[in-house]
Length: 144
Image (cartoon, rainbow, N blue to C red; front, side, top):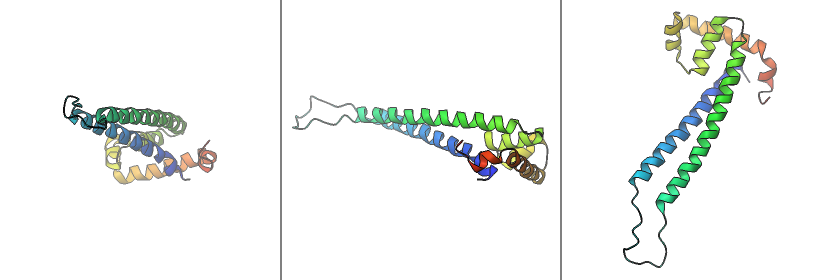
């Protein structure tokens, strides 16, 4: 695995966490649109399904998934921050942090650190090479 792939895992974790949050929001919108069961209407042999109960059960399940995804994301961020922070060059730390932890685009990074787009991508390449040299054992066996 390359350093870029390894560091990009944070973005995947962030994406999964955001998807769970969006799903929870969608389910809340569904829940607010549901009507309560009317029991004094015409009698039917089968009991009506309680849709609201089902939706809130789905919200609860999705909230658990979100909590797990958030914990996983936060652990990954802390681990990557510690690893990036051990690099010798402050500029490398800043570029890798802005790119992978903060998720900024190249243009935004260039504006923040005051370098051209092209120079930032060059620094990024050097930073990835330094990261690879320092953590080649982690990149060979990323599950550690």
